[in-house]
Image 1 (cartoon, rainbow, N blue to C red):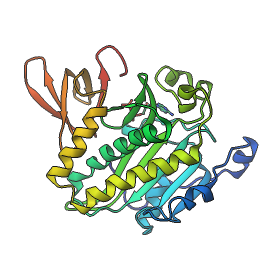
Image 2: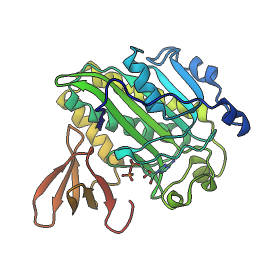
Image 3: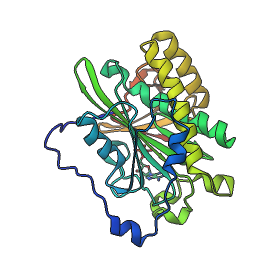
Length: 298
Ligand code: ADP
């Protein structure tokens, strides 16, 4: 979970390159088809659709600051400054993936917000299962993995005061119809797309609807009970069932260095619990670290 430090006077600006879109003959999403299936959800008629943006999270944050309501969605065909956690680059080849951000205004404490990342990961995993019959895994905290390759990433950011969340932006990037050549070489060895996995093109519209419906179902329940302890445990148990991190040895890379241990649990605040080789339990906060397998990325 990353927290914005700059609230006002941000130089981040929405960038739309219409010429760029035309030149690259971008494929477009059928937004009406998506909207027609979301009328009974919090996402009803709230889609903002652009060809090219800096990053959907940046646009979502800008309009959230202007007061746009919960359930607003920003979708773009490409992002030229898509981001992962810790300011890392997120590649968003045009017209191929799902690059979208949700504005949420949950009535929760800031400390509960990382739980929304877990809910999102779980709901995408379930949607991939239900819509496409796939069984992906979740790499703590925010990546969806198939065959040891990253097919989706989530970036949750929040704007909050000490005891109140103003809004949360959930950024979702899913590689859908990308060919591996669409990616820069350094991430080809760790990324895949649903087209690669299924061997054929996949309907982005169908998947967006599936993901949003799956998300709303869990999010609704989460809010109606104030993310209480029983709900948390149930979601965590489900999350852990899909986790490819829990039960495995991991390397945790932080600002202060690296440590190794066995990942054993996820807490109600979305932290990872590891047992280090000297038997000590350590709680790892997702905002500060990268987690890797002992011998590689996963
Ligand atoms: P990490 O998984 O490395 O801990 P993040 O969750 O922040 O970090 O994801 C960002 C990383 O994901 C980038 O550094 C890059 O290696 C990789 N990446 C960037 N774009 C994509 C993409 N479209 N698909 C899969 N992986 C990507």
